[in-house]
Amino acid sequence: MLRDPVCVFYLVLRALDTVEDDMAFPVEKKIPLLRSFHERCGDEAFTIACGYGPYVDLMRLYPLVARVFNSLDPSFASVVADITRRMGNGMADFIEKEVVTVADYDLYCHYVAGLVGVGLSDLFASSGLETHADVVASPSLSNHMALVLQKTNIVRDYLEDINEEPAPRMFWPRDVWGLYASSLDEFKDPAAAAAALKCLNHMILDALRHAEPALSYMAAIDNPDVFRFCAIPQVMAAATLAACYNNYNVFTGVVKMRRGRTARIMLECNTVADVRRAFARAAAEISSKAATAAAAGDPIAAQVVKATAKLQQACARGLGVSTAEAARGDWCAVVARLLLCAALAVLLAAALHMLPASLPLAPAWVALALLVAAWGVQPAVAALIAA
Image 1 (cartoon, rainbow, N blue to C red):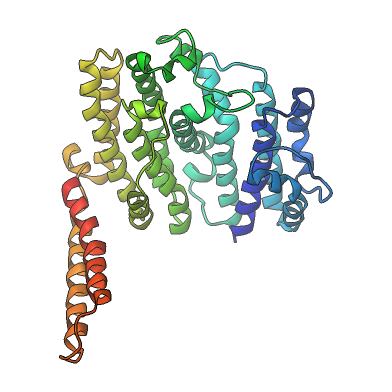
Image 2 (cartoon, rainbow, N blue to C red; image 1 turned 180 degrees about the vertical axis):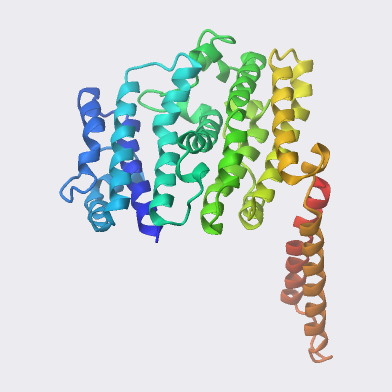
C-alpha cells in the first residue's frame, strides 16, 4: 500500500534536494525553482539539467516520477505536494542565509529532514496502518526522529561537505564552532585536532537531545513493517554518533560502521525493546569516551555524561530493567543464536557422515563448515561481549 507513495515521496524530495545541492546552479534561478517545485510534482514534461552523478539521470527522467505521482491516491499525492512546498520554501530561505544559532540549525534541519518525518507520518495515517496520536498527530515527535538522522549525517559528513566543489555548504552553527575556531575549515588541520574534537563532541551533544522523543515516536508504532522502516535508520544513527564521538577521523575521512554490524542491525532490529537496548549501548559508549574527552579538557564532557545518563535511564525505564542491564546484550538472542549454530553444526556433521567413506573431504566442504561456524558464532560472541 505504501510502496509507491513512499517511493514517489523520496524521489520528488530527492529531485528538490538535487536543485538545492547543485552549487553551480545560479542562485537567481534556484530560489524561484525551489519555491515553486511543488507545482512540478505531477508535471510529466518537466526536466532540467542539474545535479551530480546519478541525480543527473533523476532530473532528466523526472517525467517518469511525475507519471507515478499522478497515479497516486489523492490522499497520498496531497501529502507529497504539501511537504514539497514547505520544504522548497524552507530551503530557499537558507540559500543565502548562514546557519548562525542553534535555533537556525534546528530550523534548517526541520526544513530538509523534519518535514520528511512529518510527511511520512501523514502517509502512515492516510494508509490506515498507523493510528496512534504520537505517530499521526504529533509533528514534534516526527520532527525529532528525523533530526536524529539529519544531524548525524551533518556531523559525520564534515569533510565531504567542506571539500565540496565549486563551493562548500556547511550547516554547523557558528555559535557552536565559533567557540573553538575562527573558521570552520581549521578543523581539517591536524594542529587543530584538540579544538576540532571539542567542537565535534559539542555537535553530538546537540544531536543527542532528539533521541528520547524519537524513542517515544517509535514506541507508538503498531505496524511491524512501519516500525522497522523507522527504527533501523535510528539505531544506525545512534551507533554512528557513538563511533564519531571524540574521533578525529571525522575530519580526515568518513566514519562508517562495518558492513557486518550494519547487517546485524537490519536483522535484529524488530521491536522497540531492541531499539532501547541499542540506544542504551550507544549512550554507554559515548559516556565512556566522554571520560577521555574530559581528561583532555573538553568543556562539555560533563554535559555529555549527563545527557547520556538521562538517555540510558529512559531506555531502562522502557525495558523495566536497571540502567546497567539496559546496555547489555539480549541474552535470549545470544542463546538462540548459539542453539541455531549448534543445530547447523549437527546437520552438517550428519550430511558429511552420509558421504561414502572413500570420498575425501573436499576443500569446498571444509569451507562450508567454516562459513557455518562463522555465521553462527561471530554474532553470538559479539552479543556476549556486549552483554
